[in-house]
Image 1 (cartoon, rainbow, N blue to C red):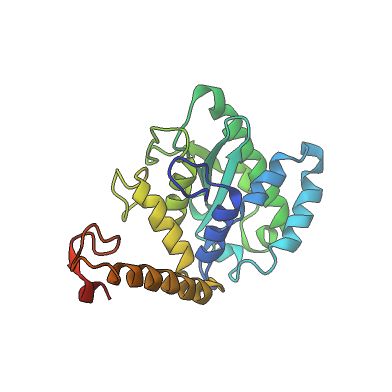
Image 2 (cartoon, helix red, strand yellow):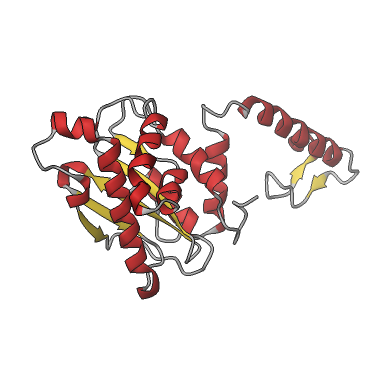
Amino acid sequence: MCLRPEEWINDGVLNAHVYYLQENGSGNWYFPTYMAEQVQNTRDGQLFELAVKLRRENTNRFTVGLKKCEKMFIPVFDRIGSHWYLIVVLPSDKKVEIWDSLPGPKYNAGRYQQAERIMKVLDHIYNEEIVNYFEKGWQFAKFNIVRTDKARRQVNGCDCGVFVMNWLQDIECRSHGSNKFQHASERVRIALSLLKNPRNRRLKEVRESARRVVDEQLDKLVEQKDPFIPHHPIARKPITRSQAK
């Protein structure tokens, strides 16, 4: 329901998207929303303890080591601004990009600080790999944090989650026109992509249910005496009863 027009997208939908995007052997790492949320809820003096917990949780999430990681995608919810944005970590470039569809002077500093705290936690989580496989002094905390100018801007107050989901799927935005980020049909596309994903264990059940509904509607249309069925919900043009069936 949160994918309906002008609704706020919640963390459940974002996390399903993240789960489907993560592939075995991929150099792109997709973190669930609770990673940034837990960093946000933890005091500075307790970040190491949090990292130990997150290390256990992420042990089997990524099937390639940090040395082969190309990008890290970390969706973040700014509770003060009630806003989703995306942190993209580029280990080989030693850079962190903030993808924000609604930046503002009131919130920018806090989002930079959140990125800095997440980098400190990543240093704790992957300390062993950093020591073993990277040059001395290599740290996430030393990465340059920038606000990318490639992030499109939203024109309303409800589509930040749509922007983040599109960036997660296609960070270069090659498959998205300027209007697709905010058009209602884009939410339909996202919903269908989640539904039809091969890893959706309820896909068969939903397809059978949808088929029953369509059959019932077509049967009702066929029972009409008029040989033409205007405004057909599927064909969108007048069709005969036999064509409808």
